[in-house]
Length: 355
Ligand code: 13P
Ligand code: SF4
Image (cartoon, rainbow, N blue to C red):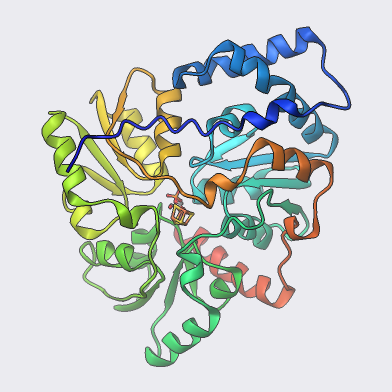
């Protein structure tokens, strides 16, 4: 392969500086907020001047959160200004779904993609769940419909359907148990059945098949971010950085997974990096995770390439501010009650089997 791309992916949104608050903060408040932002963001190359430009906006969002009894939950693939400027919690799909249940706030602003916000709503129908970017989809979620699941069930009578969380509420409603990257294998092993329909990620199914004696029946969905990684990229990094630990998301192709030190979800990768004595890591996943690790573990080095998720990056400080000020109908997550009840059962079973 060609030269390696060391990606800092600072997806800054310069237009934010033109936002003028109706409750303009004092210069002292802006200075203090910029200092708070500078802590983590300086590890990613942000200057104090850049933090000063963003500070009025993060102050305004954080004030509005208090006034509207809202929390911001952000996935680790979000941009650093969201993760360190306004998020109350940053995590993987599983951690975020638990946080959505634990938080006493009446409103959840989801800086992630639609299936994550839907999961929060399925588990918390009494809360208002807002998705700043209503068109933040997911190629895996869009690869399968409820009709497809019904067909799979007819073709595989008696087999339980395990559904990856990266799916619509309607697809979850047709399934027996949900899973995330953090607990997929545990859920498969916990079921008494020897043949399991596991949907919709083709690569994740193939990767898990190598770890279980059970027969997995898959689907052809793919993550457009992780399917782009190739074995050659991983081998080139191994050669260039002796001692590097290479951690890949389970959504990656099997030949990539065959070359890495850890295959798992984003939470697994973070835990591995934190507990490892190694100094150099390649994170075969979306660029946001590398940003997060550079900010939080500056003593470790993240090398190699990463890919951006165009859906995850649809959230920004401006649409978060707007959704808190006045949410448009399409930004309010709503799930028909009959679908929600059935999808809730699949998620509830996941929580029980993950204990
Ligand atoms: P995690 O649950 O591992 O964070 O994965 C979410 C996701 O969308 C991966 O592409
Ligand atoms: Fe979906 Fe892939 Fe984006 Fe995750 S990274 S939200 S699986 S498209």
